[in-house]
Image (cartoon, rainbow, N blue to C red; front, side, top):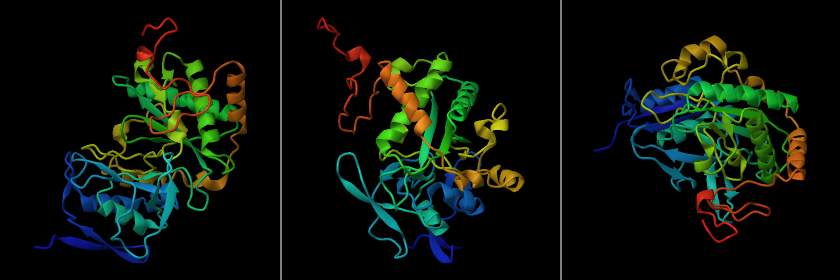
Length: 339
């Protein structure tokens, strides 16, 4: 027996949505079709976050509380209009990934069970030069959201002092993201280097709240600024993405003036329609100006001149020049052979 489906008209195309009444979020019983309707409502904003960017398919075929798997390669069975691009990973392997050109691409991905959208920081016409610096504030277990807000305020200050404009949004999970539109003039190595310098400067200012330490055992009860989210092939849930929790929380943009009062639970599939009607697409001006990374790279150079070199990379990356030993401090051998 064939499964039920509905056809959705979007961007001049008809996209098939199978099992539209399947419950994807248990708290209020929102369905797969409700998820599709969300992306149609915030389409302009959601598309801006992924437009012409390689995008990983993070699939939850049974909804937010079901199993998840990552699919980097688009299925061979796909619409002829679907746009893709071929990306290279640190391993040297390649993959043909989704590259959304319009909202029909987003709905197609949602039909596969993609709750959130996970794009690279580059566009298909220049896969080696990011146009986005991503600041991911990840609170360690037990750290209250109030601490994340406070660290985000310090991030804003540091960015402003280095002639950069940050656009904040809730992560929809536990933290806050701050994205910066940058000129596509620097490679992944330089963008990550700038992100590390930013993280260390924030840590210097509020060491009791923020940390740039890669190893979890060193982070303590603080907010981790994940500089490695700016390495090649790293992805972060884009703006207006719906995250995998029963409440269907949304990664929603907010104004800096709202920072002290914003809460993760403020933005869900149930509340975003009214929010959109009230404030519209807050990130619409984001593409009006691309900023220079040079001030942050100058900060990185000062750190290095003072002996503060590179920090660990993710485990799937080749060993980088100048990278410290890629081993947990508690397992490292000391000069006397102990440890």
